[in-house]
Length: 293
Image 1: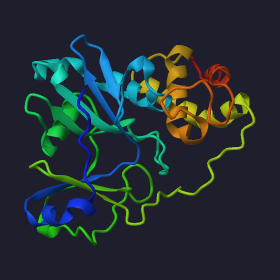
Image 2: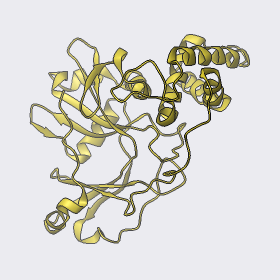
Image 3: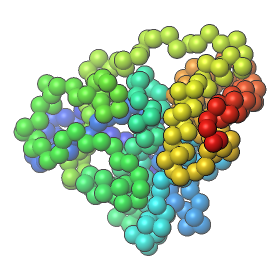
Image 4: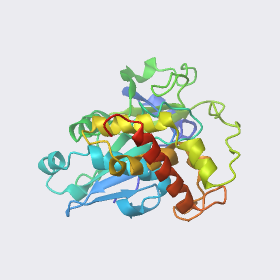
């Protein structure tokens, strides 16, 4: 599976980029982590972060939500119909998990697609083709702020910081792209996230306390709504894994301690198995309060 050819920072390439002319697409730079995936010839899905690859069952906990999203959303039949060799295609996206920005997790897709690698051409798809590809295969492309802006009309140094589509506040930055393939990232000048420096080191004594703090009714309702929208019956089996994945997505920075993607303890020192058991009990309690569950 292709590794992602990273997006250069504006400070590294801006003079030449701005002088060459052309038209730009301006996309939101979404806070999160690089996430890539590929449909194998066998029909299995393979996933990866920037540096490592893994099957679905071995995904780091904070990426479980992204794996579930791709498994739910990718139209594998459409992909097979579109390309002769599905393994020639690698999808790149941003796993939208907590990274200092208080995104509306009920609205923000678990993955926002940013690029598609075509091994037959040994190149990334053009920006417009990338957007069409994600949509054609059932996935969400990253949101576009402006299209077809001539380079001379874009104020690289003084362009106002745009609002984010995913919470009530400013975006982390923008990614500016040309159809020729050139791209660069323009980040917030001070580099600070809205919640940077806030104390998220929760006071939790044990697994039960952590479950009570994270397995909330509001989060459960968001997960239950997703299950219903997917057309699945509301049950423990359909909700529990997604509920855990949502917790890890939104609380991984203080809850988990998995620098290499594994581990059995949380960042608070208590056992993950005990935490999962406590969330399972909480899931059952919340399901009993749902009519018809």
